[in-house]
Image (cartoon, rainbow, N blue to C red; front, side, top):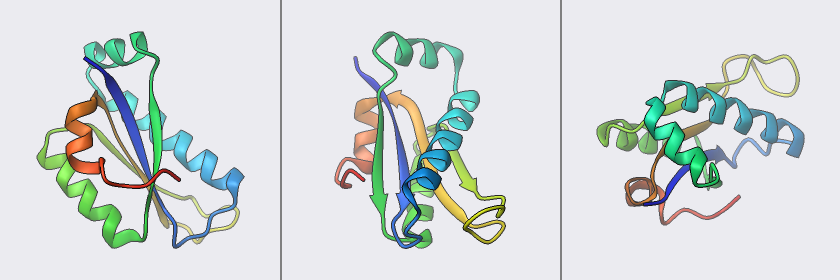
Length: 114
């Protein structure tokens, strides 16, 4: 059984690469902290797979947030502090998992890689 985590990033924000990397890191760490220890152990044993995917805007991001919550998956919705390029409170990305790859793919399997 394979485990993974996906991080969905809003493309409408046109984030600089460094800013996007930091937001993705925040999302990953926060979602792992909310996950069951056994799930995190399995995920780490199998390489701690992470995939960064594109969503067009906040509305689409929230659609995936709702679906992931309904599927009982761990999530982390990230809002920026506004100290550099974004206004305070701007929602930038969403991490889902780690969880079984098949569970996550049912929700995000059709999205394109960033």
